[in-house]
Length: 238
Image 1 (cartoon, helix red, strand yellow):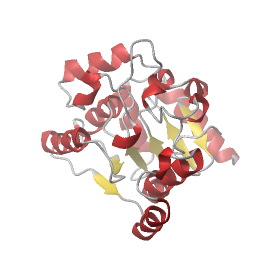
Image 2 (spheres, rainbow, N blue to C red; image 1 turned 135 degrees about the vertical axis):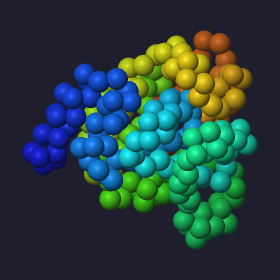
Image 3 (cartoon, rainbow, N blue to C red; image 1 turned 120 degrees about the horizontal axis):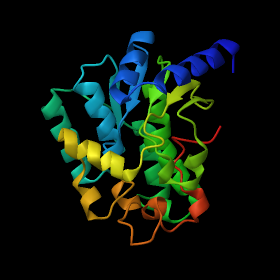
């Protein structure tokens, strides 16, 4: 990482740590005009950030990755968010030829058969489209929280994403679930109704289930796999 990038990270860390959510996002938009983008999966955390961006008309682009296998409820909150804020959240889709080749060779549900198949599916449906979405930007805003998984506890609010060559800003990293819910209720923010039915981390429909009492946050994702492998490749440790 170049010294200039390290200096930017240090500056962002210093400044945003002293600001509330909307103000920190506004500062980023001013400091990096047309270079800040936010990736939304329409999770409850992402809806907090979307509200801060859209209700304040901040110059931050918003995109989502439509894998083609999302829950109907996810599409519903996507549509409701566009309507409520008069927004036009941009969608990125998998490369058609790559997806067709994968499904035709391995089948539509091959991700249940091996970790390698699942990771290949995630790469085609999520990781490659993400790289296209992030291209040309300097700051990537996410809704990651430390409570989500043991791996995410080691993340920092501002960090360098080596895989995507971009500065990542995780403003909700230290927020609790209660703080997220309080914000949603206080500001009447639309959110995915699956969160009220035991779903914590919501991804593709075949790979997501509600969690049971006492289970950790990631238990509902790829539940047939070892717990240490539960990342799709979008957010990897540096």
